[in-house]
Each structure stands twice: as structure tokens, then as C-alpha cells.
Length: 316
Ligand SMILES: O=C(O)CCC(=O)C(=O)O
Ligand SMILES: [Fe+2]
Image (cartoon, rainbow, N blue to C red; front, side, top):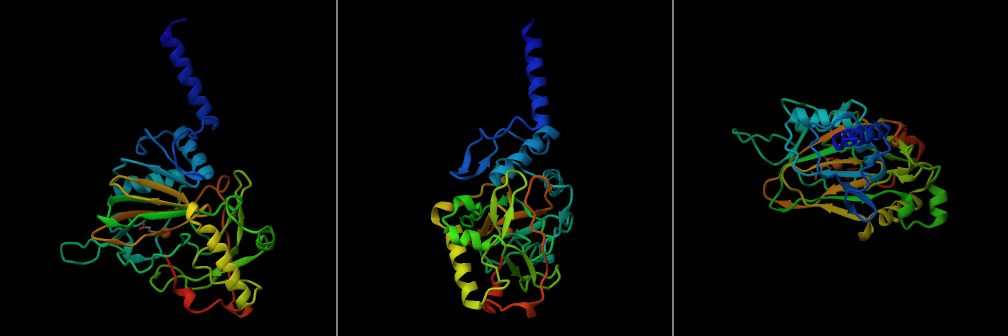
């Protein structure tokens, strides 16, 4: 048997294994001891179907994927986002951020055009821990961020895992939240979404591996069926568990970084920054066989008591 033939057979076997999803990317370096992977040695503009499949599995298992040195056009970023999801993207809820040439890519930046007009959403007053799209009945729950210009000071994006097994939550609380639902409303700057209150389950189940995921953030407005005080206390208890310092990964951006994250496995926020910063974002409908889905419903505020009016102004 010649060496070339053996190598070709091996490559074929590898590619078949990849197609079947048996070859994982789990050897890649973690971003944090309990979640996230940096996928190395890959160009997302030329990845093949088997590699895309392996990346979907890696995202379903690890919650956050980082790819360095991906200098993408807006069209390439939108295509990559469609490929990692179910093929459909959602528009950002802030129309000021819609790219003029590729509206499903949002411009997250304080850069201005030649006339001095904003080219995107540059406000930094909304840096709360959140889950993208949580104010929608049907959230596009996977998201992409692509770095064009990192800020010279600060401006990391921080992620905290919501995988319940890894959180310090008392067993009694864990049992209590299993059948609870909570609500959200859009921010006042969200002009591209219905301004209704929506409810979602507090605990989601990953169809990939059965893990329980906490769908909870600073934007949680009320727990259905709980009184005000009880709701406040529960909100605080759950946030403290998610935001334990050992449960957070803060990403320091470099130009060309691409991050894909599953909003059911992490919450995130932008950290304070100085100077110019330019990220781009996509909101991605996830394949339902691999990712938990926070399918919700409109909620009638007459049915329950609010946590407080002021908390409805948090956002991301
Ligand atoms: O700019 C960032 O670091 C995060 C932006 C973000 O959270 C979003 O667009 O949903
Ligand atoms: Fe976000």
C-alpha cells in the first residue's frame, strides 16, 4: 500500500466522520474553565459543510466560540451567521444600527460618517447583563459579534454562563424555578419591535444534551405568580449566582475577532470604554435540534405585579 493512498483513505475517513458529527472541536483551547472555545486554524469564509456542522455542535456544547483573524465583509458576516444558524437572521431592534448595505448586520459603533452623522448605535448607557432578543416572543437566540476596531481603553464584552449545573443555586430554588415564567419589555431605544411585555420560561432545556439553562437577566421584569418582594429576592439570588466572578469571561477584542454565542447558555454585557470602537453584530435563528429555544408569549400586565417600574429601563 503506498503512503499517498493511505493518507487519502485517512482523510476520507476523517471527512466522513466529520459529516457524521463524530469528530469534535473539543481539543480547541477553552475561553473559560467551564465554557467557550477558541476555534483555531479555520477560515469561516471557506469552511465546508462538515466543518460548519462541527462548529454548530461546538457552539451547542460550549456556548461561545471565538475565531481570530476573520476580516469579514458585511455580506460574509451575514452569510457565516446564516450558515451557523437555521438560515434566517433577525433585524436588530434598533433601526439606527442597521447597516445601509446589509441591514441584517448591525453597526455597534460611535464612529460617524463624513457628515458627522452616526453610522450605528453608539450609546454606552445601556451596558446591562442581558440576553439578546429576550424582549421578543420568538427570540433569535444565537448571535455574532465581529470586531472592526477595538476601543483603546475598556470595551471588553463579558459573558457569564447560565448552565444551571455550574451555578451555586440552592436545591430548593432550583426546584422552585423549574415551572416559573418571567417577563421582559423592550427598551425605549428599541424602535424595531412591538412594545409589548413578553413572558418566557425561566428554565430552558438544551435539546443537545439535556442541560438546564437559566433564562434570566438584569432585564427580567417580573416572575409570573410571585409577589413583588418575593420576585425581587429571587431576581437578585439568580443574578448573583450567574454573576459570580469565577463564572465570567471578559473578551478583549482584536480586529478580525468573530464571536458566536448562544444567548440561552450565556448572558453578556459590554464593559465601559473610552475612544472609538466598532463592532458589528448579527442575530441568528438557531437550529432547534441543537439549541434551547426560549419560545414565549405576549403577557397581559393585569395578570401579575411588577417588580418595579425603574427596572424596566435596564437593557443591552
Ligand atoms: O458591543 C458589545 O460589546 C455588545 C453588544 C451587544 O450586546 C449587542 O449588540 O447585543
Ligand atoms: Fe447583546
